[in-house]
Image (cartoon, rainbow, N blue to C red; front, side, top):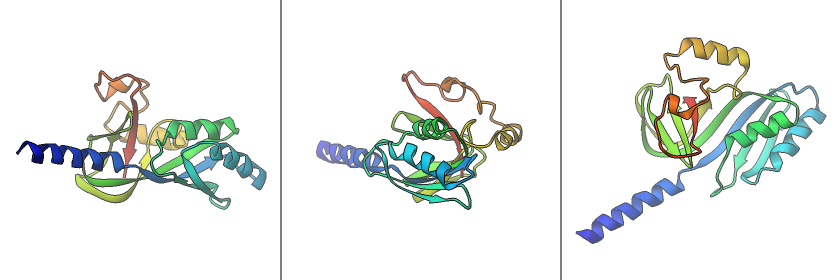
Length: 179
């Protein structure tokens, strides 16, 4: 019996470890030419967790594929874009889920980050699912202002992670996301 319990624990731990980000689509504000996109491309390419980047100048967006097994840091992506002189207009990230139950206000933890689902219906996520980061700096100021007024969650825009998620862990980043 003990062997079965240990096997189950190891099996589910492995499933959790294999769950990861797959890709992202980042709309960048301020791009006006191919030189602008080249500077953002170059900045994003310096991140070790990025495998490939495709630029769509028409929609001023970057389709990013992440390396398998690497820890993805969305704040580092944002910082690189801002460091190149631009800002994030929208960030949609695709994550590979396995039987993840979500509902309005639920949380999902992954690699020192907590993802707080807002304005979503109750459902189970399986396979590659894209979600939108709803925090300040990850969407245009206008869209963020609209979202903040629209949602019942007052923790959006708060600096402290403890404003919506109580934890004793240090260095936890909270992202507000919607499907």
